[in-house]
Structures are given as structure tokens and as C-alpha cells.
Image (cartoon, rainbow, N blue to C red; front, side, top):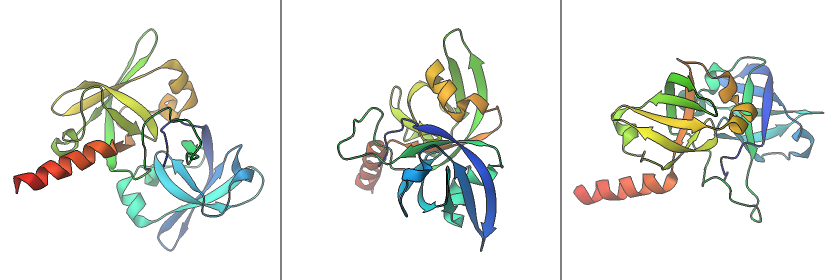
Amino acid sequence: MFTGIIEELGIVKNIANKKGNMVLTIEASFAKKLKLNESVSHNGACLSVIPASGKQYKVMAVQETLDKTNLKHLKKGDKINLERSMSAKGQMDGHFVLGHVDGVAKCTTIKKLKGSHIFTFAGSKSDMNYIVQKGSIAINGVSLTIAKLTATSFSVAIIPYTFKHTNFQDLKVGEFVNIEFDVLGKYVVQYLSKLKK
């Protein structure tokens, strides 16, 4: 369980292929504190830790994860949003984020305002079933509020702190982000769909 409040921007130090899976070596200040199989969110995708040495650790993304996320597009040197799992005694600042990415969305426009940035993403018809105005969504693991919604797109406003401390700072039009819809909304949609049958 995560909150969508990014703890640190990690750096991808190496990418290797192991039997069709992607093994990522990540540099992060908290690497020494991580334990074997500990859950860490990487751009919103929950992956299990393989301890390494110093300021680095490894994680493996299997084919299922690569098919559903933007991790397959990572390159050596890329910045990646990191969040360790929430402590039972921790403070809930964002919203309930499971680290189970629902899919990817393409960034269509980026608008720089005086005190923020507006990022807009294309959404499929099925995606729109899970998104509501002023509702929560996790984008690359970041807990955000829907600012604008149309039949085919959704927008979020990024405050300066979030822009500076996440990989939104490097996101370009045409690139893909991981999205996880609000788990409560997903249950409601599934329940209502069963009632119609």
C-alpha cells in the first residue's frame, strides 16, 4: 500500500535482460535500508527489492508488468519516482495507491502557467469510466486530483514542489505515463456493471 507521495527521485543506473524479464539497478539514498522482497513503488508500479550494495538496489519487472507499464521505455540515466510502502503508523497524505498499474496514458499537452503546470493525457472510453472530476488518480505513482475531464482526456495541475521533486519535470508530449485509477472507483464500477447483467 502506498500514498502517492513521492519519497525520492531515483536514477536508473543499469538495465539488464534476464530470461525475458527486465532487471533494473536503481540508485537511491534509502537503498541501504531496504530488505529482500520489500515493496517499493517505481513510477507507480510495485516491485520487490533485490538488495545490492551502497546506494543501489535491484528490482525485476516481469513481462506482465512490462506489458502494462511504461517501465519498458526506461533508459539508463532516467529519473524514476520512488515511494516505499506505507507504515501502519504512517500518515496518509495522498490517497490509497496499491501499486497495481491499470495501464498507460499518452501525454498530449503541457501548459506552463505562472504558478503551476497543466498536463493533459488521452484517455480511452473505458478509462473514463473510472475517472471523475476532482477525483483521485495516480500518475507515475504521484497522487493527483483530476482538474479537467472531457470525453477523451483528463488533466491534472502540478504544483511547483511536485514538478521539481518528481519526473514530471522531464515528461514530454507524446510520452507515456503509468496510471492507476482510484481503487474505490474501480469497485463501484464493477459492482454497478454486475447489477446491469
